[in-house]
Length: 313
Image (cartoon, rainbow, N blue to C red):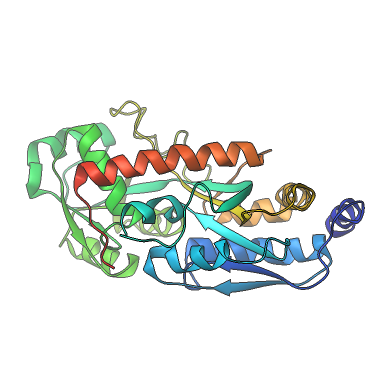
């Protein structure tokens, strides 16, 4: 049903005439890749052409973004972009692309918060208790990340600034080593993605205290938001979106908007996204996505400058 509805819509205007490449700027297994692999089969049915996932990892997402920016603007190359798109230009001397001008925005797909996890040795049960504890501990409290300039590093520094804490950053090479250190008590705090946070919290190995989003996450309905629990205005959301190369004709853009909206309205796709901690964004538009990119670029450029974060490449 989904495929026939969207294909009918595409047939009224432009439709792809060959297999479609979806560039993902990270290796298989990450959140960007996961979203792409949920969407890919549904978009393929919608478009009547295969959608091939092309993982172009490296430079914190910059390598994939460069390739997507330089692709032909004919509608046959989609870019599954995330927050790294707007972060890397503030970290690298030459990211090789302009996040605000080298792409044609199509649609925001999903959003997801991070979850504040603490080692069970931390003597708190709630976020307000943690906030008081963290302010007292200062630099003797360690938070981990998946690496310098990773999402966890940025959210940790944003938290320090807005919450009046001085937690010390400890970078690791990926989420796995960071959570291993958290479990061992080598660090005390970690901002984790929803699926693994759910697992750790359910097992009782770690304590989940709050989510970083604007609203509670459906997968963790009993966890409050940080902004509603003691840090007004605090918000961090991982987002995923579809972009096309600059210069893609408007009819092509609109057909991909139509296809993506139909796919995101499919209950099976929604269940898959929710099961991974994502919340589907309803009725996003190219203009709304363009505004999101502008806001996020300015926001993280300031956080990176204020915290003195330097890229590793």
